[in-house]
Amino acid sequence: MSEHRPHWRDRALLCLAFLALYAALGQHTFYKTDGIGLVHFARSGPVWGSVHHPLYEPLLHELDRLLEPLGASPYRSALAFSALGSALGVALAHAGFLRLGLARGSAALAAALAGLAPAVFFFATVVEYHGPFFGTAGLAFWCMARAAQRPSPARALALALATYFAASLHATGHLLPSLTCAWLLALGFPSLRWRALVAPCIAGAAHVALLFGVPALTRALGNAASPDAQAAFFTMQEFAPLDLPLGFAREWLLAFAPLSLVLFWRPREPALRLEWYALLAACVPYALLSWSLNTGHNPSECGAYWLPLALPAARLAVAQLPRAAAVALVLVCAGTGLWQIARHDEPAAQRAWIAGFDAARAGRPALPWIGHSSEAAALLIERPDQEYLALDFLRTLGPAGVQAGVPQLEAQVDAWRRNGMDLYLTASARELIGLLEPRTGPGFRLWLEREFEFEPVESGPFRAERLMPRR
Image 1 (tube, rainbow, N blue to C red):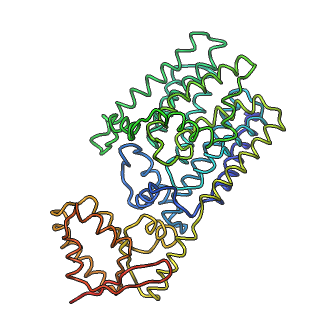
Image 2 (image 1 turned 60 degrees about the vertical axis):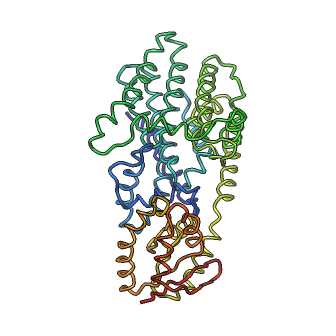
């Protein structure tokens, strides 16, 4: 028992150190627009999340319940979820590396390398699915290492549960068995030969059984994450032949550089060579995933879907490099990750917009009607207590839906006015109304013109019209 205590202490210190690092670098900028919707769910507490990633939002809600009494906003809770999940992934990676035979110092170094891989580092500091998902990938890796250390059906089933749990946080977790099962086979083959296939086959088959079984058993409870919905996530975009190498280059070679270069370093040691082959094999489905989701006309996802591959890459790098070279690689990865974070985290524009809004309302209660996601981002991050109305809901309505919804909005407007609120229609909201009018009909615009007069307001980058009731 006593010989394991230093290992537990190492893991705890690693987890706390990386949690502090990720939290200190938590960004003031959303990564794309998914995070805006996730922050909205932080306080609403759905029993199930999206049809692709059903457990992220309920788990975020529970964490927010714990942090809200401490003064955390929903945005800060979501940032903490990313930091905590990623830090747990680092600690679990350390536990797995020890089980794979790395010495105490090498295991800590490999865990640090995985946690500071530029893509992992980046997603630990933004609101997105991928930071918490990395924690579950670490759990799957640890279960894989346990199954490799002493194969048994029970440990293979535990691995399947871990990979399915990861897939419930993000649907790309359904690719995890391609990595964990191939790696498990590589670890067991030198001693067990073809008997080493037993545990990976059990783990893979059990994962598939869970993919179909869990939604069937929980559908009555509201879980809409059917196998069809999970599979649909992988075919959201069109395939273009030239985008396959482009996706691989963007999502692995660039997003994880320089760690990603280990893919081109064939180990001399036979056992490590098998693990390298397992990493190569796992790259195939991940490259196909990037092909479908990151086609050339879409922006890069910065390696978001490849995060689990940082674990075998870190293991192979540390197992082959001299200690000084491995430390240098960790430092270069950390520097690259910090540069990516600093380049992305640019809140100046949203803070200027908030300052303009504050100046325009001059201390009076106000409620902006907004049309662009950047305005929602600014309010959620900089003014989490500020109420607003996002007119994006009009996208889902036709003329009949607008006509049915106007009386409800009229009642809400009356309530806002009774509370002394000034209403502002931002320039982006006005633009959105015009863009959607061919779909929604002119009903919403005509209602606005019938109910309000419009007083132009310009305060720095905040451009809007104050809605003055005609009656």
